[in-house]
Length: 85
Image (cartoon, rainbow, N blue to C red):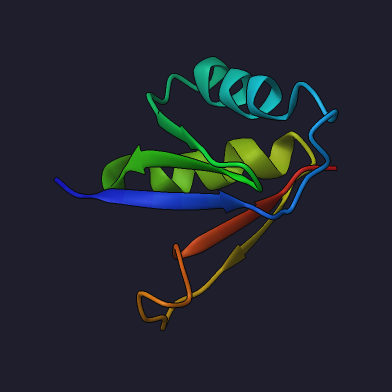
């Protein structure tokens, strides 16, 4: 199966810590595996397509705002964005 990507809205200050830990922990508690990618300005979390609805629910339960982009091209980036609270 394919993957779905969540982009953590950035840029984030470099001294901001624990964002990826918080988000990956909430997925782990929901039993969802992930592939994490970090860049200088933001982070990405990829989950298997079959787990995307559960991942959205886990993020929202954690207090994140998840915006779903249904129609995007590769210049727009991933299909979901997640804003930690």
